Length: 92
Image 1 (tube, helix red, strand yellow):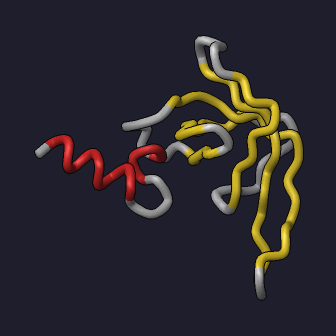
Image 2 (cartoon, rainbow, N blue to C red):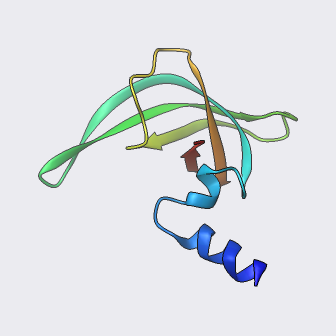
């Protein structure tokens, strides 16, 4: 039963298991800059920066956060979870 519950959480929209840090590699994303990207009739907010795991085994200098962003400041470190290469979720 627990395996099914975890599978459900991982596959739900927006990666709830990753946001809750139940799956993936948790640590920080350092914001380099944010920008607006056209998406159909609206715009998405994208912040680019660097992800680094606590043990420094995983470093991604091309990391991006899409639509889960707030008013981040340049250089700010925010808690995220890395689900896979180029797939990051804000920690809740």
